[in-house]
Amino acid sequence: MTENGLIALSGLINGIGERINPTEFGKYVVFALSGKDDECAKLACGIVSDLANALRQNIQQYLLDFVPNLIAILKDQSHTREAKLAAIVALGDLAMNAGESFCVQFLPDVLKILESASQKSLTYVRESDDEDLARYLTHLRETLVECYTTIVHGVND
Image (cartoon, rainbow, N blue to C red):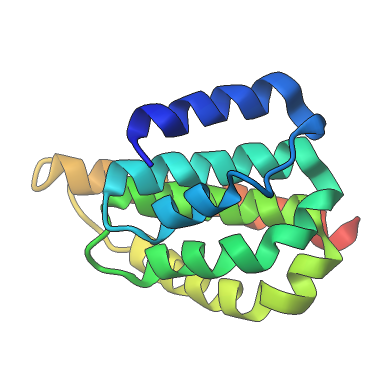
């Protein structure tokens, strides 16, 4: 799966919304999530978010395909910060839309990973010492708050 193919797929999902059937192309998204190409992994995370928001509760049938790969991205030290942030957003979107199914299957593991990321986000770095890291940590905190918020919405629906 190429970057252009993933971009086209994202457009398709956003264009036809809940009428999309990921059965045929889902394997390509999973392949991109499980690969080592960070740009493809980041785009695939965005597609998972698009699918979750398009399919809403129907996304629950695909959780086993997507969540383990998103968790793997977060655990893999070789993935870029941007891919990890996209994986966090995708997990939040899956949690919000799949609701109870997500919570039953994955919530404990996801919360452990988010707790670890939260601890990392509290690292103090002066912007004058490392501007990129300081910006990333701020973005990580914002992304984590967004993710926790979507999880709470998923738990309560």
